[in-house]
Length: 148
Image (cartoon, rainbow, N blue to C red; front, top):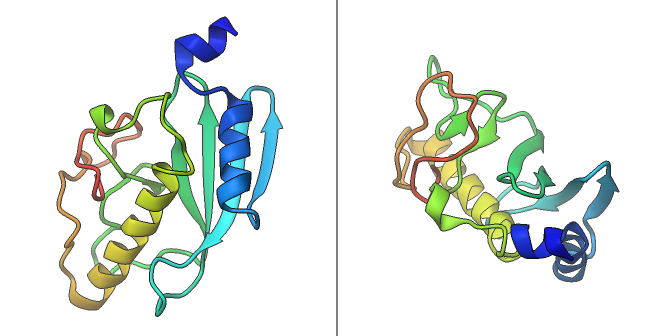
């Protein structure tokens, strides 16, 4: 009980909310880590993306796209990602452990994917925010909620 108070929602609470809102997702709770994968389509015209969220109490959620492999534009790298292609979704202050992954992180990932598709088509990142420093592996985001 002290852990839940200290870190906000428990892993079980996060897992329940994800399962309730996204019943097609796959969940595992192993050694204090919640791992959730689910297919998301950011818009009705978008392709499907298999997204993975890894979350440990006291840390920020780490979000990656499992498939398809995210493409880049010519010589450019992926926009708004950290080392390891972790999606940059929010500023530190925009997410706390008291929040539900199902109601914040998952919709933010879908929004990131929508802006990614626009970027692929136009070459312009329309999601706003600050880009993570090149080569940053610190997943303590410092950009805006809309794509880091």
